[in-house]
Length: 361
Image: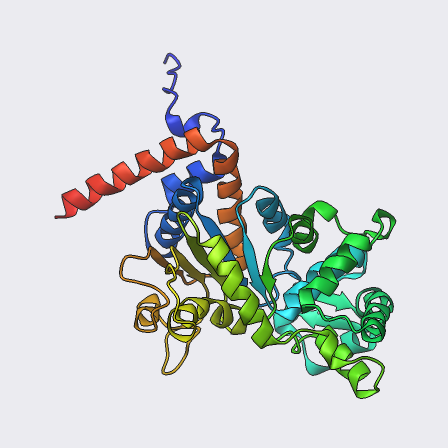
């Protein structure tokens, strides 16, 4: 029988935006659909001149989220950050101590004795990877503690992240172990992104700082308080929300998300000043809704607190952020590099969905 040549279809051609094209053709329902729609709305907002504020919980830096977050910051896809003290310092650790990390992919089967061995190896396990005590904590401590002591002597007062901005910018390239292009802290410091680090005391270096305060080697006053962070956030939000407004992109729950999202009602009710609501909301979390759980609360609950409105594009992706976020950021970076092609894919995808909805009616 003669050979037949299959017609070349659009799906077989090489796309200039392979990740976005993949999402548009495959992410049709359930959490994948939420991911797709959140991605499209993110691009709509940024493409229209809007800004995006990120809240990052968990151990995303240890999970190397910086591989996609750092280029996203450089590309202008992220305009402000609220992060835990752990995420802040662990981005730095990945830069200076990357070779010392050890992975434990079979951690689910570990015994107490297995983890005790890891402790004796001076490693600190974070799920399936671990931070090296000496190469990370103690190496950075030798640089950061003198900065605190100098600030104490001079009577300086700065926000927690400003010490880390200064530190990461001062580290010579010869001290890098990780790829500097993958360090989101370095990218944020170079871009001078506005940042809050609520609850920074709950971190390794928060504990180290407390010990030096206890020994009267440093003054607690050299670090500005969380209340002062909110005061700064008032000003940052007013600047970021000009024009099309600023969206809120949240990874996980906890204080890194709870703290900054409150800025809108606080400006409105506490300062009694006009303020734009958040222009977009997306939360990626596997926390489920339960009685009193703020992390698992549906976005609608935030309407009652005047943080979001009924017109705010809202998305909840109940999945693992280490899977979802790199995918979304990769697609958004493609959009940023090829805006016309991106809009064509998004518009075609939406048209297909619209036709499907019409058939369903």
